[in-house]
Length: 475
Image (cartoon, rainbow, N blue to C red; front, top):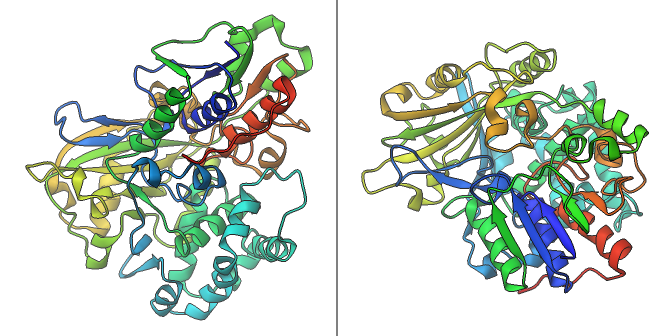
């Protein structure tokens, strides 16, 4: 066996696909009984005709990521529906703020639409370059210097107190909800980068919903891997290093247990000092019908940011970062059936995906808190709940071992780690362990179902270990 990939998340599968297409023998080992890592979809234990997205649900980078753009999920039978409304942010006592794919329509609905146009218009006009820079490897000059300079200026503005130059409570909330995906204090450069990336995608390729659930993305990668001779084994927990070259789609600290005393002293100390960030508490609902939103336009928005105003969201994120539960936490939600009616079963039941930001390792069940937040914007929500499946942050690692303490960013949400990786290295996908590499979202460019961490790690492996170029990905 030339290459072993430990973990079958999107990054691990991306790395495996590239190595197999390069002509290497590849195996993927997955500890869970099902494959796909952060892009799995599983049936509800009581209502199996309703399927929940276990980790990710909406995929803003499924069309825009350079890896997936070349892999071309749609040509492989994956339905990706980019809805008219990319995301929405309800506001207490006021109309919701809506981010349409149409930038001008978005601006028309905001109190100070010109400010939103000034912030996002130039970035949307250079969408490919913006995405390429933000999820690039940061180790070469950006291909479009003017676009990079424009983006840097916007990041400095939105990552500092100058972000209040953006006028209008609705526009501020619309941006802050996107930035809050990082689960970090705001304003900050890392949150600004995420917010600008996601908001730019909202007005370009959109925020696609995978038909049938996130599993469709993992299944397309698995099918291509097997077609090129790769093998996959589920239910295999790796406790000792496999022979040959190994790519780890794991949390960096997993290497402490796998290699033990064989780790170089300095690297061991760096891993022991590795810190994870705040977590999320996941709550999946089974609903009997559409949600009774007070603002009826929200019924057409698959993705919702339910954190209230900018002031409320920034306060909540600060509380979580300081280790306290926010009375009104940042809540993200997805009603995928809006774009994909196949998620509704014959009796009208459908899955409603939510999570709340909480302190690292929190064992507090957030189902009641999330329900309370939903009742603010959809009175009567409780009446349509058929079942509730709640996983506190402290148990999220049972769904995916990478999510230590509920940290779905695998510790990667900082500017330094986005540039240098989990431990400072010139090549952040390499380790000082011979033939061992990291390809999880703890490595650049960080979290998100985009496959780019796996791409960069595989590129390193192909060049260093085998002297091979990166193969084409087109079907």
